[in-house]
Length: 482
Image 1 (cartoon, rainbow, N blue to C red):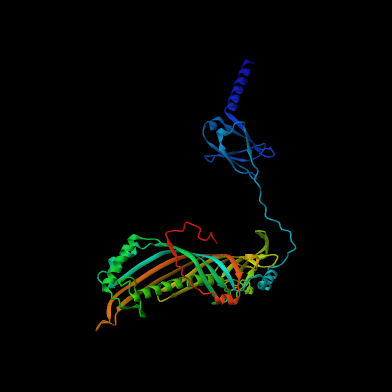
Image 2: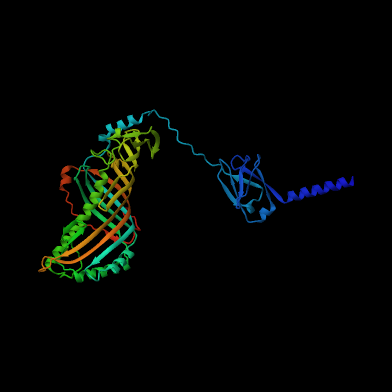
């Protein structure tokens, strides 16, 4: 009898000791206070346990003594993380997680894709602005260029200062990766008809990186050219059997009388040409964007006007802002190169957004050691009722990837018809192997669009006197005032 009591006491003390070295914790729903069964409990060493059907799990005292963390997860609840030492009363609360369900839209707009596209076509004239307008436009271009390969061989020069050593220094110090950004604000006039656009630039800026080492090498090159070339020479460039002749000017090499009437006149003319050239460049960039609009006579993206060339998905209904829109995906059935997602207003059947991307190579050229490829183009167009009138383009963005290269011999020949007996002066020849990857991003915001009549348009004079302000980087919002 004594033996049995002693054995029972030993077992009781053993069990009591085990219980004293562990703590039971219960996991509860913080709202309903009901147990959270089979929740996953794991520690920083990735070892874990699960709660039982009543939401209980057990921790030993040794874990409390360590400054360890505990992580709890269960379907339908937000994940919880805390230190074990923070568990005071043996209860942990988990917050239920909201389950997001897809929108269920009840509507009587049960139309097929073909019927929707047909209505888009019929409503183009009523929906979209085709008159001449005055627009406030912000335009930006970002260009990233990576030189993959640059190699010059078979170098020969009649100018001893311009040698392979100088050329190697120049090539080694040219940045392999270059980024250039340009922004402009302007008033843009016209419609989508060809050559019926005008521009008045307001301001512009462009990034410029100054490399002092490279500029030092370039100054050596300029000095060599200045000492060996004649100011009244002309140059012929020959690549293999193909010659390119012309009066190629090298500005800034020779000292001139900056007070002479001829110099001042030429400087003024050059300045005007640069300003006109920059304005025309900006105008052509913006015009090329408008040439892509799907409702033009010859659109760059012809999903609607050439709809038979595409396959359309079944329409889906969703909200874009406050508007109920159809979303239709289209892919070319033939030689067309772009796929798109079309967002179509369900009330007036206006396309309010287009996401487009090429699925076939866009352009490839390779001939006589020269190659160019336009690899990809993806972007977005958004159409809005600017100033509560007809729909007009309000935002455009596109990213373009391309590559180009050259692997040809080049020969630059200095000639001068004023030197008696010897027209040919100097010659530099080499073979160049060049490969470049380019990524461009174009973006445009239209802040205002007002119709104007033809007479007002014709009276607009393009007097552009804007050149970009050069900065090392863009740190401010350039178009906030718009």
